[in-house]
Length: 113
Length: 113
Image (cartoon, rainbow over the protein chains, first blue to last red):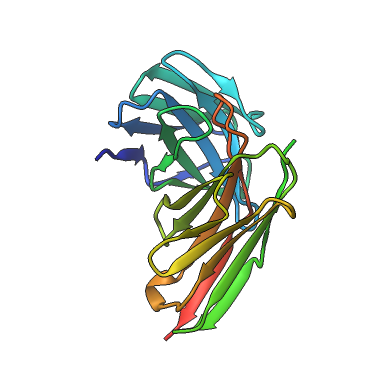
């Protein structure tokens, strides 16, 4: 089996700060995703990537940048953290295609002071 | 686009009782359906993947029913135990090469010993 590793597990930032979240997978999956999880709102797709160097906007891409540096890694940048923002950011990967299961990392918990 | 509504948002049951979570989707072309379980501090783990052609799907201790006519997907835990306490998410996909999933908002299930 494989694993998805997200770093850091917890991230505390200041208002206006640029923050970067990292994700690594060893499944050798083509497609990787970043989701934001807010209480009571389910998961919302921020960015996804279907192959190395590819980048596609999701439903919530404003305020974020992403980078698929290589097949195994996908990073997300919060371009300017919002005061009192609290959310969990989940990275996932899949072999590709809507029929495929997504495998999730444990998440990065963001708090902005 | 696809809309997925999940209910209830919170559910408490006693150990040994059944628990039912229902998702309603809007796109009649949806073809793949997923239930994920999220334990505290962890990412989402696949519980079951259901294809449009199969209406009744049985897992260990639970049943997933798909009603295509009413565009409804349900998760029935037949005899809940404390280890079932978690947040459950349904997800729906149209099966395109894009691999986009649409998630419900989640149900927090608490099983009281």
